[in-house]
Image 1 (cartoon, rainbow, N blue to C red):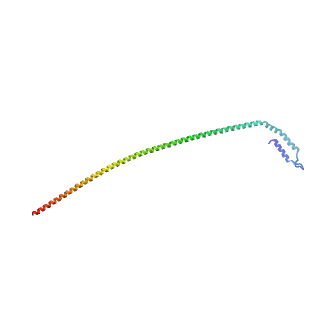
Image 2 (cartoon, rainbow, N blue to C red; image 1 turned 180 degrees about the horizontal axis):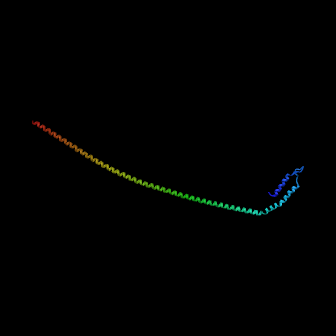
Image 3 (tube, helix red, strand yellow; image 1 turned 90 degrees about the vertical axis):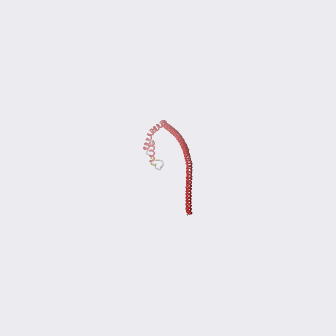
Length: 208
């Protein structure tokens, strides 16, 4: 608050505290000396206040120029910061774009590697199955041939044994026939001898 404003406020307070004249609601009783003192103080303060305000007015251009300078500087700083933010944003966008590109390339390469590995694994599996099947086929052929050969050898062995058995049985039959023939001859000889004995005895009786 300026000095003039303080004096005016003091004068207003003074008037508020004054008493009204008898039979009047608008007129008051004042002390002339006190009022004059306040007015003199106001007069004395007025030139100083006027000078101060005049100085402020005279410095208006300088103040406005300084304010404009500060405002321009702030605007430039704001523009520079905004440009930096835009640049940073563009850099971030480029970085994101490059990162996405790298991720895409890496993903594609990884998928290619996985696909190739899968194809190679399938080829190896197919080759292994084919090779194993060939081995099993060869083994089956060997086993089949072995079975056929053994069956043939077994058949030949059985035939040979059967032939030998037949020969043995034939020999036994011939042996039995010879034994029976010998028994028959022996019995015939015994019978002939007995007959000869009877004949001799009969002859002797006749002679007596």
